[in-house]
Length: 277
View 1: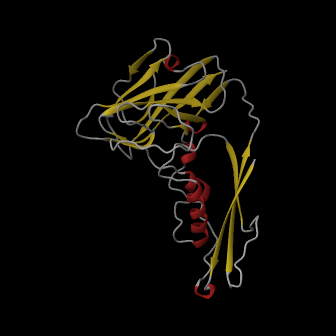
View 2: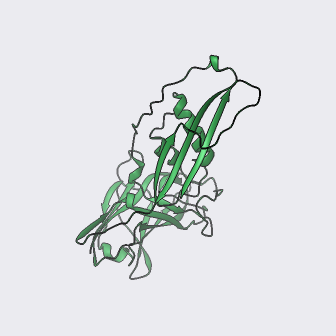
View 3: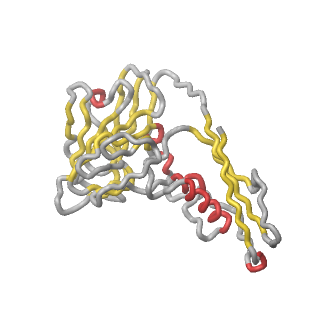
């Protein structure tokens, strides 16, 4: 399936406008491709991707980076060509109010040719065309035997319990008093014989030391939340990981803040799963 969107800009006084360089910087301060992909966010029910939700002030849902990922840069105001592309993308994707961009494999490309023709009758104008092509691919995935590592970038996440705060996100969010629960799952159907290891990645913008949150994992065997004691910011190897991984590779995590007076910022919370096939 190919989806085409065109942005055509007509300028009456073209002489007063200078054409900016068309170069686009690919430099990023960080790579969001290493993050798990949101497949849903919901309040008390599961909603399709793209549905906007209103959350209470105790919870912040974060910033969606789809626009920046496509542009290849977060600096778009100082380049006219990049800003035109940014304007088109923000018409399609709202980075501040999103229910998640879904999952899948897409090829994205730009063209300076318009798929349609348009003009102004009896008026002078200059045309700057920008067309974006979003092509969904259906790749054949071949998973070999032996040891398989599923980093966060090959997982999806969804909100399974919004708690009292009405929402929750593992990325660029903060939590006041209350809790929420998330489910991580491999983006591909994964059958495995045993769980080799499970590593939890928990970051808060350079913070170190003890984590002021109660983090629990769902015990798939006992059917209960098991608190992970003495957590430090950074990477934590989960003991007895098999009990916390479902038959389809899912991992359920519960985040709770007991504080009445302070909120805790969560830069990222996700997992790396290693299994044997």
